[in-house]
Length: 275
Image 1 (cartoon, rainbow, N blue to C red):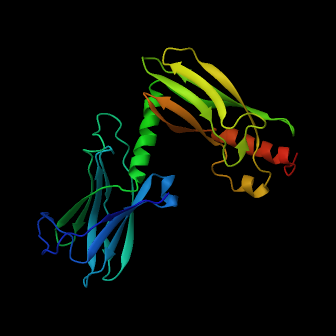
Image 2: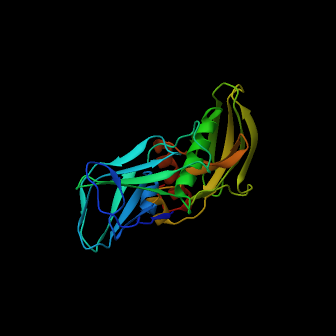
Image 3: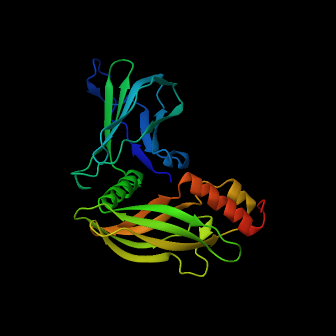
């Protein structure tokens, strides 16, 4: 997932000193984006494009957004030579999921502190929405956690062609919140045999309900040894939920030990394991 926010350089002005906010130097632009490799670690990058005739030295970079809790700071000196482009990576702050402003009132800002003592801050929109997607996903998970905890609690292997069984533990956490559990989606490695796809749950769970389990049948989606050896996401299931009228998917990953059991079972079921 790659999203790019172009931050247009302000009109050329002399840089001010002493930390006073100033415009970006003439010819300098910045872009905020996220590479595929940044997604798992909740990272993002600011691309600094220096089309000026002078080297640019950045001593500190700050990202602030009303939908994130606190600021992300890259406290490291970087020099971008004239005519060069450099990407500066940073980790995103946690999503703000309580009393954050609505989309119309939200602002997003990148601040560069320069070696000459000046500071340039640019306020931007997010037209492609990668920060919005992160905020919505993480706040849906936070809202779900007020009602129920979901966890893969047990795995029972099988011999081909029979399906194995995964047990989804559904544990209400108390309180007045409630959530709808709609379905479980396939992964890049696993599907549900002859059962419907996605696998239906159709449960409404209140915080005060008793704990329950759901058995989900699984078979390999593919019998490719490389799919097992290179697997990263094959045991991470998206569970579609609805909380307070907001619908989306939350990830429920198999614990690491169970992940190993599932991958060994796939190899055996497909006939290329040690047996």
